[in-house]
Image (cartoon, rainbow, N blue to C red; front, side, top):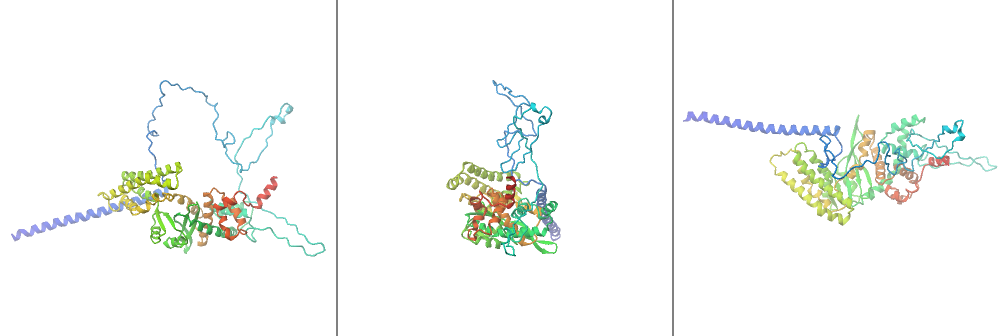
Amino acid sequence: MKMMSTPLQTTCSDDDLTVAELARLNAENGVLRDENAALKRRVAWFEKQLFGETSEKRPVDNPHQPSLLGEVPPLTEPEGEQVTITYQRGTALKQRPDDCVNDTGLRFNSEVPVEVIELPAPELESADAEQFEIIGTKSTFRLAQRPASYVVLQYNRPVVKRKGADQPLPSPAPSNVLDRSLADVSLLSGLLVDKFLYHLPLHRQHQRITQAGITLSRATLTTLVKRAIELLRPIVDAQLINVLRSQVLAMDETPIKAGKAAKGKLKQSWFWPLYGDQDEVVFTFSASRGRQHIEAVLKKQFTGTLISDGYAAYACYAEQNAGITHAQCWVHSRRQFLEAEQDEPAAVRQALDHIAELYRIEEQIRSQGLSSEKKHLYRLACSKPVVDTFFEWCERQLQRNDLTPKNPLLQAVHYVLKRKTELRVFLEDPEVPLDTNHLERTLRPIPMGRKAWLFCWTELGAEHVGIIQSLISTCKLHGIDPYTYLTDVLLRVNEHPASRVLELTPRVWKERFAEQPLRSDLYRAVERITD
């Protein structure tokens, strides 16, 4: 009996080792599969960033619209009705919108200069010209372009002296925005608009100036831009104070390279744009992405609802300040589910349908012009059931046994459930939007500018970018021409009372000065030549 027990014990031990080895291999295989899937998703994300679409719009299934790739059903005419053709090919005139000048379709407003070219009639220059007479004029419009041009303003000042005196009286030069500067205000505004609105770097503007026959150093252009922006700093400071008085404030961050970190390397810095409830935006700058900047900016005087993306620094700041309600962006939550669409297309489709229903309700609110309490009640009646159903669906996904911890769908579900309270804030406050898309559209010039001017050589230069972009972006939000605004403000800022600097912010400037803005002497010269 003892001799038989030994082989049995050995055999059982070998079986146990085999089972343990298989379990270990299965576990290791599962880990490798998860890592492989994660790497594939990362590669797909990078490919989408390089080659994919930037739009987040989803195709809409319309059962009444036939597919372009399938068969088109033949058109059938109702019985008893006949179609009568009342036109002939080539004889009907195309209908043009009311703002077209003529049938060529060229559209322009009254501010566009028009150069009139009078063409002679060959019949009136022939031998029998007396047989013809002019009965009207027919105009043809063509759009032309002039190369960028620069004008030198020559101020001729009379030099006088008192009769009998030997010394002439002083003849001071006309006032200018920048003391002892060669730049007219029109050049300053043009440099700022070309670089920060149209993303044309100063070295390209310098090339254009050189080709126009003007000798000017690039360092001079840089100095002019710096001095002009410094004049605008108090205006942006006043606008920031007004933005922080908002009841609903949107905040985000976007990276920028600014300042030297080491030889051949630049520091990673950040712009922190703030969007107020009066359509004003201010780009604040910080050398880090830490919570300290949020505290330094918002602790000045902001109390209200702060809406942001899922960055944890905003939530931590809101938790430590009783006067702040934190709201989360639904678009950022939606993007989490989009990352899982390849692995779980059916489940992701359900999540996206729930979120899309919220936006359809918001569209109905806008179309009906609802606001304040009516908007609040409409959201409670229509949006709240959708939100409740969505979170119940998320809870059910946690009970699925086929989802591993690293599954992107499960990660998306955890993302929204962790922010459940913040995502429901819009149901209680009608002034809170669903997302921060309005802010993301406003900060778009920063990444677009990075593709043109790449980086800021100093941190002070990055601050200047934030100052001028705050004014230009706010001008666009209020339908103001940035060139007209900057020209007026630069001419006005040195004489305007500091206690009323808020009047020079774009929102207030539109009400007070937009109808009769100050202009450069260049326009006065042009008007005299035209007259």
